[in-house]
Image 1 (tube, helix red, strand yellow):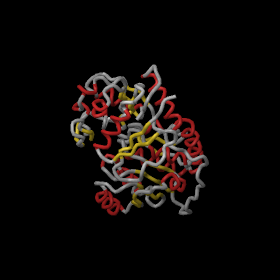
Image 2 (cartoon, helix red, strand yellow):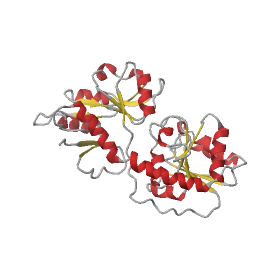
Image 3 (cartoon, rainbow, N blue to C red):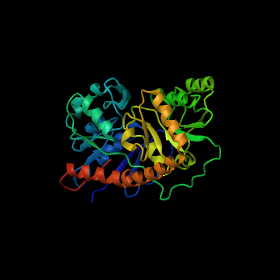
Image 4 (cartoon, one colour):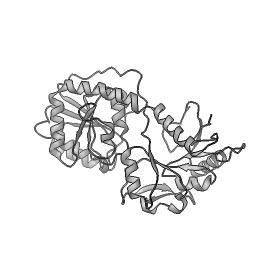
Length: 339
């Protein structure tokens, strides 16, 4: 059986804690990361090593463990001009690169990349400067064994949640404008969960100007439980690499309304586990919210179906099994460490 080690580079937030059968090595800076990865990449019994990496550290990992197979994971739907923050393999500094200016001379020997959605994989194939073999492994999300009790407040309104840090690319302003539409504004309420970002002041002014029924509630560490109190989760970002909130909502038997862009339509079966709208048509978003408002029974059915799909397809166990299959395909002999 392979042994699994996790290097947890923590920059704030809670400690890693236990990680099942894996051995967790917590580091807080570049020096600690170098030491941990170099040590784990040189096992005493000379067993082969596969490093499940990130696009952020991939080039550094190739240098730190030159005898290992490095498999980077791309967590975005990248485009040609998108700025990616990556580790400079020389000094560990965080630098900004586009996909074409990554150090491909170091990454040339990487055998396979992973995208966390088909959209993520397709974008990498399109924009990487050379043809790359890319596998798709969707993220795994812990689904509660039992759906949380749906304690929906008796407001009479359609209660909509959105989970997004308030930065421009999340396009929360599209949701604010939609719920401010006169056909909806007195019948719905939008609650936005997520850390305040650079767009927060502008969004607050917009909501006040439009008298939109919106509350900005900030970060919530009990989000899956809170989502059980909503009729619908709504998202607007068109470059989501995965969209964990959709699966968190599904675990609470809450359906989602998502744009037909990025990874979002991979997670929602339109009309069965949620609803999909055209992101470039504001009227389509308003129409979809109106449909949701008029048929609460359909939302309940879609929520149940969303939970069933999440339990079958997006669990950590299934995700881990896919990574293990990929890793073992890279090494004919027992594995020493997967990071």
